[in-house]
Amino acid sequence: MVIRFLSLLALLALGCSQYRVEERASPRPVSGDVSLPKLIHGEEIDLRFSGCERTASRFFIIRLLIRADGSTGDLEFTKGEPTACIRSFIARVVADWAFEPPTLNGEPVGVYYLRTISYRD
Image 1 (tube, rainbow, N blue to C red):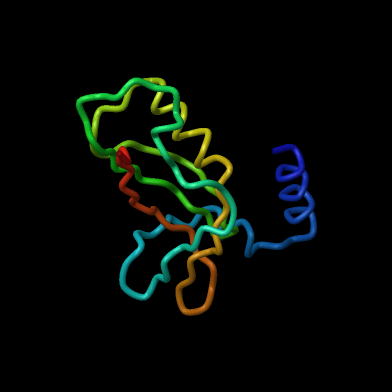
Image 2 (cartoon, rainbow, N blue to C red):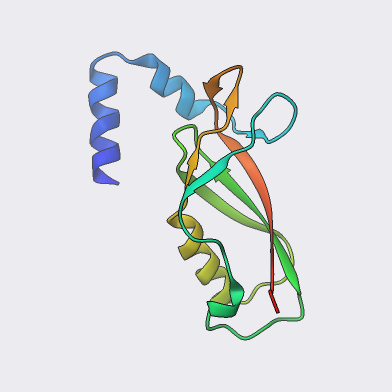
């Protein structure tokens, strides 16, 4: 986090406005001309190994911010009622994810990505 902050300060000092614009641009949904993000680092979410008790919800849908650099950001649960344990487990897994950045017209863009997570029996 400190390195990212220092990098941003260096870019701003050099007058690199493209980075500032990219950070302010609103993430897009994955649709139309926006390419799908491709997971290049990190483990798939397998709730069997979470150590958490099952809930009444058999699946959850998450909305995840994938930044233009391929890193992950905000995580929101849009469907299902996860326990605090499940929320924590999923948050730890997605924090380690890295993606090949999604693109629009060949340029990397930030997107909101919907993903279904279910119990595997």
